[in-house]
Image 1 (cartoon, one colour):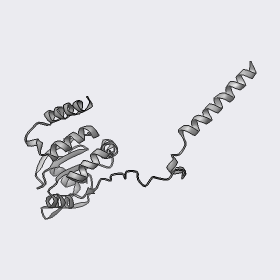
Image 2 (tube, one colour):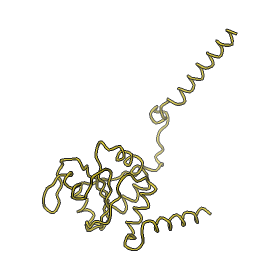
Image 3 (cartoon, one colour):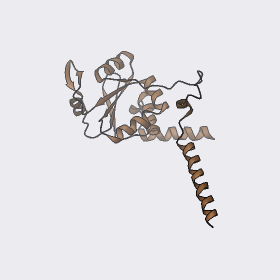
Image 4 (cartoon, rainbow, N blue to C red):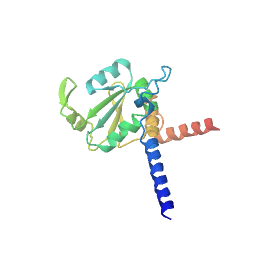
Amino acid sequence: MKRHLIYLLILAWLITLRADSVFCSKPASEKGGKKKNPLEKKEIKLTWYKYDEGLAKAKKEKKHIMVHFYATWCGWCKRMDRYTFGNEGVRKVLNESYVAIKVNGQSGEKVKVNDREITERQLAGKYGVRAYPVTWFLKPSGERIAPRRGYAGAEEFLYILNWVKDDLYDKISFGQFVKQQQKKEKAKKK
């Protein structure tokens, strides 16, 4: 009986060691074992601008503007950074069709608005930001279209980006747009 218990304990210990090596091992890139393939796709980086710089760039390039208000302590903001703005499709649409602006709504950092300097905190107040995150969409001229308050996942955010970039907000409701897109996606799968 003791012998079986000893074998069972040794077996459990070996399984634990094996599980540790499988689940706690470093990726090949950290080990130095596997080199990156130069033909692999490069990761798309999202370019963020300060408020005043972004408005000038959008006007010059005739691109829509996305102004993302966040706070450093905001958990949903961090989640949105990681999962929404970390999504390759979202980054691609933003880089191609938008000027992305990021504003820390709690910051005392200065930005120029209408030839006068104000803090990012004051700018957030001008946009009516009372909780975070809030994402405003603007026309290339800087005219406000609408905000998206709170966290938005990558799938929903892509719908919003496409709806705004194609100027469909003047022609069709967002709900109708989403239904149309979902019908198209279902038809493609068939």
